[in-house]
Length: 78
Image (tube, rainbow, N blue to C red; front, side):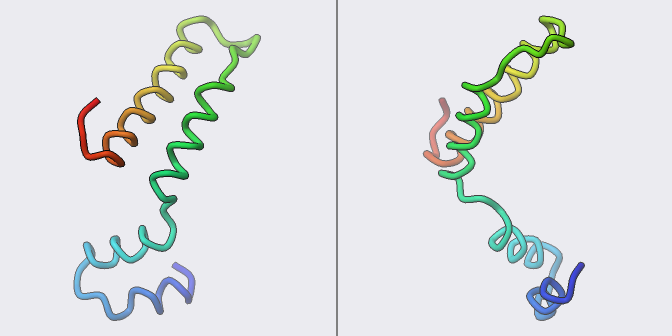
């Protein structure tokens, strides 16, 4: 951990409080994450070295991550 992170978390009383402070500083906002996931999903292309199963698995992962983030953002199950 660098000095800035040590300073940020020095007054924390629990690991949960440390985690909360660090994610508040470093985690993308949900809206930014949704934008990034949508971009990754729609620009995903099958590489010449990928077989179809690997390509579909990558698409499913992007889609699953996107749905999870949208559910977290809206508070409703999609």
